[in-house]
Length: 186
Image 1 (cartoon, one colour):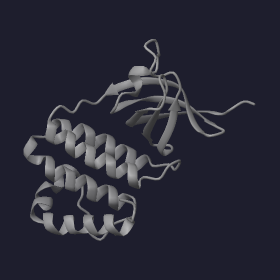
Image 2 (image 1 turned 60 degrees about the horizontal axis):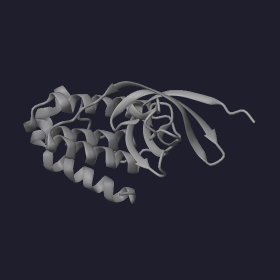
Image 3 (image 1 turned 90 degrees about the horizontal axis):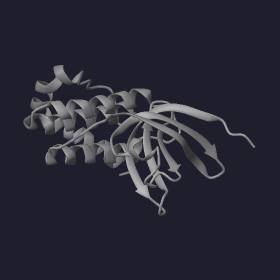
C-alpha cells in the first residue's frame, strides 16, 4: 500500500519521547493546523531528523497519514527561534499552551500559523517592559481569529495597538478570560 506524502512548513511546539529512539512531535502548520506526528528513530544519535525537531524549530516537514496517525518521513530545519529571557519563555509557554488547547488538528490554519510565527519573532526583539502587553495582544488576537471573541473590538496590528492595549488592558483581559472560560477547553 502506498501513502500520500504531504509536504508542509511548520513550527515545532512540543517534543515528547515515547520510546528509546522515537518521539511524538507537535507541529503547528499553515496547511493542517496542529499536527501530532510520530518521528520514528529521531532520537538516535545518527538521526538526520534530530535537530529539525527541537522546540521552536521552523522547518519543512514531509509526513504521511498511516493507520494510526501521522508519521514524519523527512524534516529540514530552516530556523531555530531562541528565547533566552526567563519572563519571555514563560509568556511563550502560556501562549503556545493555549494554542495547543484551542487550535484544531488537521484543519488549515494559515492565518494563525503566520500570526504565531510573527509573535515568536516579535517577542525576541521587544524590550522586557512590553512582554505583558504583547501577551495580551497575542492571546486576544488568537482567540478572535479562532472565533472565541467577537470581532467588535479590533485591536489592529502590534505596532499600532500598544497604547490602546495599555489603556484598555482590563477590558481586553476580561474578554480573554470570558472567552477561555466559555471554550471549556482550558
